[in-house]
Image (cartoon, rainbow over all chains, first blue to last red; front, side, top):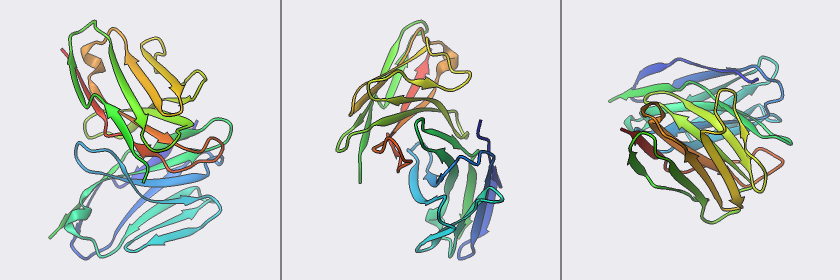
Length: 113
Length: 117
């Protein structure tokens, strides 16, 4: 089955700096890679996603890159703000007759004012 | 955007009882619903995937007789924790997608915190 590794598990950055979180996956059949932000006790919120036919996607301060050959994808947050502090999860999604999703282990991001 | 509700948000029950959690898509038809379990400070663990009108597909290690999933309509899926024990205490979250053949955006419910005494 799919195995998703996420690094780092914790990340502290100064306000205004960039943050990068990386995930690797094992199953080449995975074709959809969303990123979620989860605040304490709340549901995960989709912040950006990328499909396997695209190498990069950007939405304001957030970007995601995908390297299918190396089977890794990364979340980039620029000009970080204190409200970006949360736990971020990546996921690898395999569609088809049977949909399957595997989540990464999460990264706790702390933005220091 | 699409809204998924979950009920109840919090439940406390005695050991040995059964608890039903409902997951509803309020403004779209959810062909696929996912059930997750999340322990404190941990990632979401996929328990099962359910497609409307068919049996749920359980992940390895998840007891199908203990965690009964029913996806009877395109807007409702239920998870029943049977004969609950303290180790079943956890945060249960459902999500739904509207596409059956291509991965689409997952919309998460707000979660249900189950405490088994």
